[in-house]
Amino acid sequence: MDRSRLEAFSDGVFAVAITLLALDLTVEGPGHGPLLDQLYDKWPAFLAYLISFFMIGIVWVNHHALVRSIIKVDRRLLFLNLVLLLFVVLIPFATATEAEYFPHDSGDARLAMALYAGVFLGMSIGFASMLEWTLHGQRVYQPVPPERRWAARARFAGGSLAYVIAIAVAAFSAVASFVLIALIALYYILENTPAAADPPGRGGDEDPVA
Image (cartoon, rainbow, N blue to C red; front, side, top):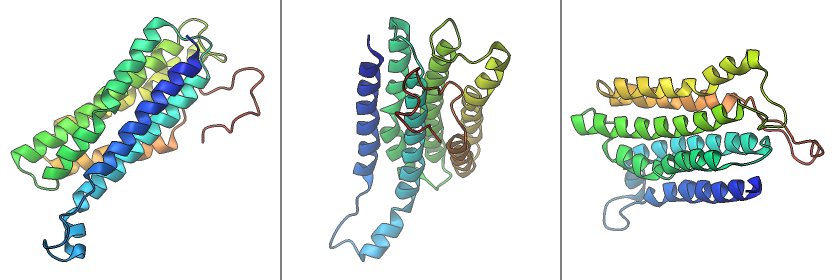
């Protein structure tokens, strides 16, 4: 399969998921108090939307960089990509559930936060699996040198461990778990995908991923 089809399909899923996030940003409307108060009551939803929006955006940017470096798509990569997208489309549901209970620290709030972190864990495992696929054989235009592969795994697959910690923390504090997830998002905003390399002959066609 041409990798452009993989990227086009994935981009469509990312676009739908990131759009669905906004559907939960609603207010009760006239007859339910001042609009300013209604907006204030929705601040957990706006905060969760912000974090989830950037999480999906970060994965989309890194997914683009990773796929751009791939020489040829095979069946295994297609299914690994589906695992990633499986969890991407769950993010709007997990975000809406988390926003309903945050920032309370009840048992339900902690469970909602564990669900939120769990979806991100699944997404992280999906992306790490795709990254691992690129580290073997001649599958990308500029392979990561063997001596740098464990560093690449630690930088990206290491996010899975951080989400496991966030799930464990959620059992005691929903707020602390949310702060940890926000810090993970900040880290990946600043981190680059190690396999982001332009194919030969396309060096000036696209700007590098920042």
